[in-house]
Length: 164
Image (cartoon, rainbow, N blue to C red; front, top):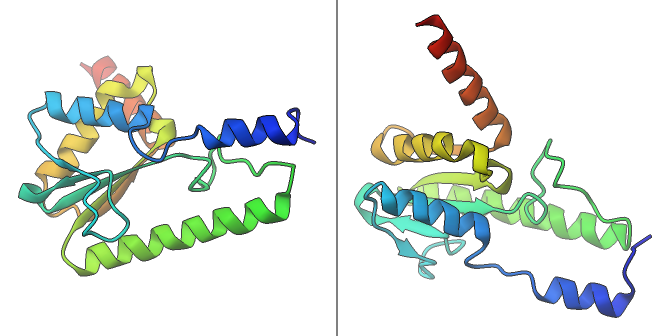
């Protein structure tokens, strides 16, 4: 059962943004500081990517774990209220995401998806490095960066430091 009444829940949901979210602004800041220049929300491309890097023929999507039903993420839960509606909606979102990714790949774009759970304060340096590596290496075509990926990278870095 929802802890908010219908009117309050509606008000909360209406304030959720689709552009310029906190994780998206963080990724933009990291990449701009690293010297990358990009276009925002190019409507002529399938799915209207969050960032487009024409020079690198790459796009970045910054996905919210809840809205895009990030598998294995604690933030991607189905609300208990109106569960049927939410399951169908989130399934449609995942299907649309895969169709958009396929269309972009078919037209020669490289696609990086950064999940909201990867945009934490403790993982910023690792996120920056992985995103820059993707953009600079044209052989990397389609990848995802999430919290689990970053934790594994940080462990690897820690082990490398301890070895030396």
